[in-house]
Image 1 (spheres, rainbow, N blue to C red):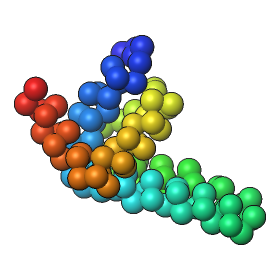
Image 2 (image 1 turned 30 degrees about the horizontal axis):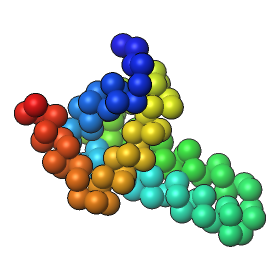
Image 3 (image 1 turned 135 degrees about the vertical axis):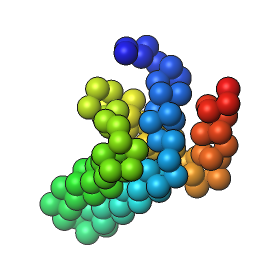
Amino acid sequence: MRYRSFAEFWPFYVAEHAKPLTRRLHFMGTSGVLLFALATIFTGQLRLIWGMPLFGYGFAWVGHFFVEHNRPATFKHPLYSLLGDFVMYKKMWLGQMDREIAARKHG
């Protein structure tokens, strides 16, 4: 499916992350990405950048392939998927993601 906006994509993204373990794995991966980014900035060691996609995608893809049993949205919608990861990350920090999942299931 083609999405014309992130707002159109978001319900699909939420549905693809229905299981709590999948979301937790994404959270760990995104946290790792941010830590690698900070380490790169503070140490000046550019080779650390390689850890960002390996860590981020590694955790997320384990969640999709072995927990959720679906294909990561990154393959067809890379930019929206990346944005979705950070929106979900923020919502998880704020304690809002479980409500988001429940609302999409019942609404």
